[in-house]
Length: 212
Ligand SMILES: N[C@@H](CCC(=O)N[C@@H](CS)C(=O)NCC(=O)O)C(=O)O
Image 1 (cartoon, rainbow, N blue to C red):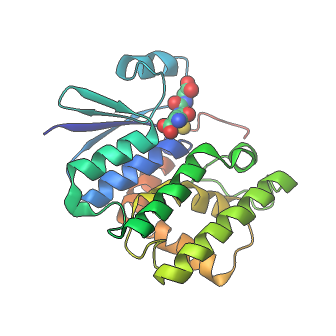
Image 2: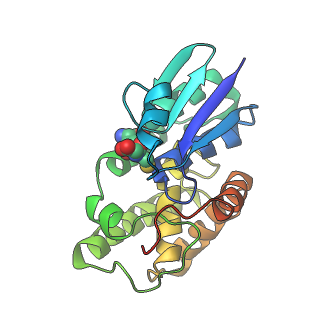
């Protein structure tokens, strides 16, 4: 089986990080091809692999799957042994709810604290709206971690952790105040082998957003 995940710049593409972590955790061999964002050829390069014009997109033996949640769900079906959703139905419903909330929400956090896994921008982007989003995220994490006891939201790593991983990097980059529970969670994500690889590759990419 040939799996190719096309991602945007690893430094900036928060959507791309999510299915990358799900695939890395599933332990299946896959090729990851990066399309640098914000270059004169970005649009054409993405259009050549995804008619929807966005990354991430997964190619699997001629099948094209796009949009973060659809890709993560596909990986879960392809490799059920990876247990990418919690086994318990109620926990699974909770995991899907918070994943969907992440996918459709937190616009201010995304706008004011855009992902940049390489940068240190402590104190920047701390608008009232972004901080309100951050408080809601931390409530989600604390509620899940209180039940699961960690280290991930539902104990073992799931798609819900993939969905929130870019927020952990934003909190680190922008120096958002964290309690001990949320800090430990961010550290657990940062230590994932898939994330360590992603960050190493991001640091080696050209900076296509100078001045930001
Ligand atoms: N809803 C999509 C959003 C994907 C998205 O916005 N991707 C950005 C990169 S993070 C992109 O493709 N930007 C390039 C462009 O819009 O030209 C998903 O969940 O995958």
